[in-house]
Amino acid sequence: MANNTSNNPQSPEQNDPNLEHSSTSPNESSQMDTSHPLASTSGSRLRPEDISPHEIAGVRYGKCKWFNVAKGWGFLTPNDGGHEVFVHQSIIQMSGFRSLGEQEEVEFECHLTERGLEATRVSGIQGSDCHGSTFRPRSKKRHRRVRCYNCGEFANHIASKCHLGPQPKRCHLCKQDDHLFANCPTKKNQNVDQSSGNPDEENSGAGGGNEEENVAKDQS
Image 1 (spheres, rainbow, N blue to C red):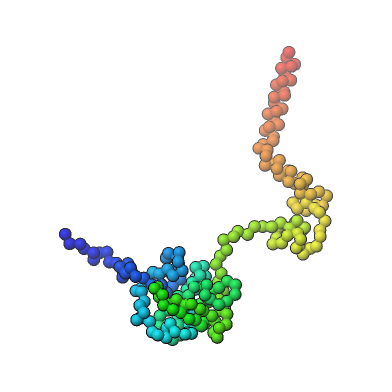
Image 2: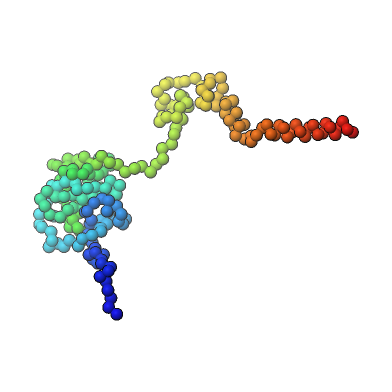
């Protein structure tokens, strides 16, 4: 029986086992396997004969097409035409967190790898440091609230760095200076209210039991 594949068309990307860097958009690239910074999604692999001599010889100039600050890589668009160039954060010349801003002008050198053109050096114009992106990846750390035991407030400082100077010892809960937090009556009252279910019912039950005992004694 004839195999009908017209109802299940496949894209060239699905049929082509040789894939190069994707330079389409950071959103599409974020959904692919990024275990290696040179991960790719679409297009045929570049061959040496596809590359012009000027693309891998000497210093070139261009702009950042896009850069994913979370993944640490992106693509450059050369000013002299030719293929787009993959760039990894490790070769960007700048201090601190390394990245590139969108459309940032750069000076770079690159070479041809099995996955495409890859930058080997990226800097600002005339060898200056790159400016980088204004975006930063979100921190996974959870910020803890810190209580200053000098002013008694939850703030972003500790007692040794409190701007109020040394304060008299007082309760951090009710702000009274005649006792400390460990002996605070407000805290004790809160604990009693939470631990007791209904004190009125307990008292009435206890009182009823005493009355029955008294009646029994009188009858005897």
